[in-house]
Length: 183
Image 1 (cartoon, rainbow, N blue to C red):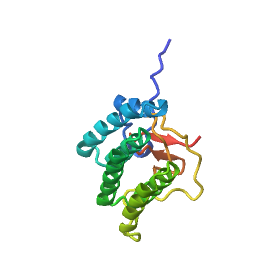
Image 2: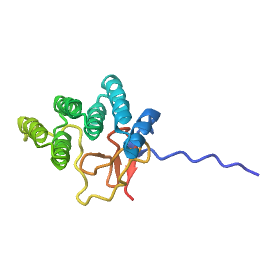
Image 3: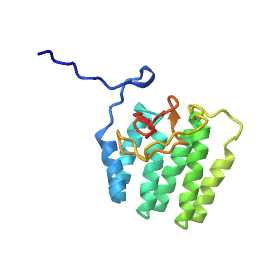
Image 4: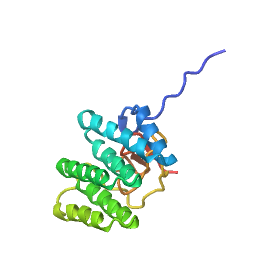
């Protein structure tokens, strides 16, 4: 009897399949469980490492660390992470992502009654030039397909307006780089 070779995962656009760090999976699982203190520590650790090895991913990790700190009632630390992540996006020219992520942060802060903090983030967004190119974000397809709410690789949240689209039905996870296909 002949043995079949195992099928390999299809790599979009010739990109290698990313290796998802277990610490990222753990951090996202901790967020989902509501263990915000430990999740924040994990995201902070990942963000510091990503600054050197994966600078494209570091801003989003700082923003997640900030969200975890805010949810753990550590507002000052959370705001520091938000500001650092957004400033990294601005420095990298990721202006479209910065505007979308910043708008989401403002809305979430307002929902929690943190109006003064939301105004601080709104001020950062207003100081960034609007007409500049969007950096690394490819234009999303005209009709956005429905993506899963969480990345199958790392468990991080997937937002169709904040991802880089690889093709008409595949986006790249902003945390781990895994391809995320429409449902």
